[in-house]
Amino acid sequence: SIPLSFFSAIGAISKKGILVKGANYVEKLTEIENIIFDKTGTLTHGIFKVTKIKTYGIKEEELLELAALSESFSTHPIAKSIVKAFNKEINHEKVSSHEEFSGLGVKATIQNTEVLVGNQKLLNRFSVDIPEEISEDLNVVFVAINSKIAGFIVVDDVIKEEAKNFIEELKRVQIKKTYMLTGDKKEVALKVANNLGIDEVRYELLPQDKLSSFKEIKEKTGKITAFVGDGINDAPTLASSDIGFAMGGIGSDLAVKSADVVVLNDKLDSILDAIKISKKTKVIVY
Ligand code: ADP
Ligand code: MG
Image (tube, rainbow, N blue to C red; front, side, top):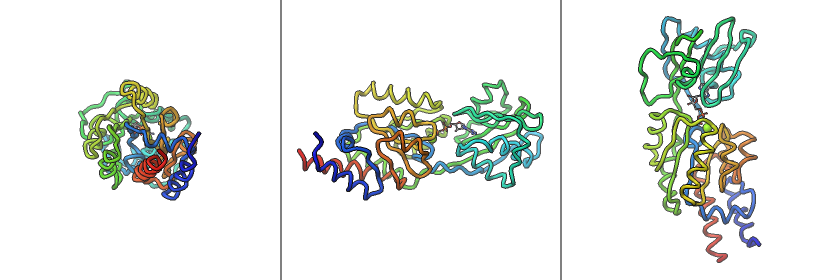
C-alpha cells in the first residue's frame, strides 16, 4: 500500500506548480537515475526568430511569401516563426495542396509551383541539390522551388535562462546521467548540449527515433529513466518512460495526457522541487 504521506507530498509538490498524477510517482521520483530531455521547447524556449534570409536569383520578399504560405498549415514552432516574419495576411486560396513531413519540413503547391521548406533531409528525400556547404551551428531552413534550391532562412531559438544551473543541480539530487534528444542537426545539437553540460546527446532523430533512443538507453543502463518533453513529436516517448514530465508552457493536450508529471508553470527548476520534496517524504516514511 502507498504511505499516506505520499499523498501530502503530492499536495506540497502541487503548490510549486507541478501536477503529479498518482502517489506511486512520488516513490518513482526518488529513484530516477537517468533523465532524458527533448531539446526544442524543453531546454530551449521553442520560440524561433528569423535572423537571416539568403536567396539565389529570387527576391527575398517572394521567397518569404512562398515559404510562409507553405508553412501556414503547420503548427511547428519553425513554421510559426516564418509566418510571423512574413508579417502579411496569408491567402490560403493560393495553396492548392500541402503536406507535412514530421522532423523534416513541408511541401506545398502554390499556383502550379512546387515548394519545399525544410532541412537537408527533406531536400535529400526530393533529390534537390544544395549549392554551397552550410555547416554552421545554425538552424537553416531551405526553400526549394520546382526542385531547385531558391534560398534559405536561418531561424534561431534561445536556451532557457535557468537551464544550465538546473542541469548542474541535478547531480546534487543523485541524478547520474543526463541526455538530450533532438531532431536538429549535429552542430546545433552539440552547441546546446555543450553549453548546458549535458552528458550525452543524440541528434537528427525523427519522432520514432526518439522513442527507440529512449528504449535503448533504458535497456543499456537498466536504470529508472525519466523523460522530459513538450509533447511536440515526443508524446509516445513521454508515455513509455518510467516517469514522463510534460512541460506546460506551449505543451499540447497530448503532452498532458501522455505524461505522469505535468510542469504547469513551465519551469525546469520545478522538476528539482518535485524530486527534493519526494526524497524528503521518503526519508520520513522509511
Ligand atoms: P526537436 O527534436 O528539436 O523538437 P523536430 O523533430 O520538431 O525538432 O524537428 C527537427 C527538424 O526538422 C527541425 O530542426 C527542422 O530542421 C525540421 N522541421 C520540422 N518541421 C519543420 C517545418 N514545419 N518547417 C521547417 N523545418 C521543419
Ligand atoms: Mg520538440
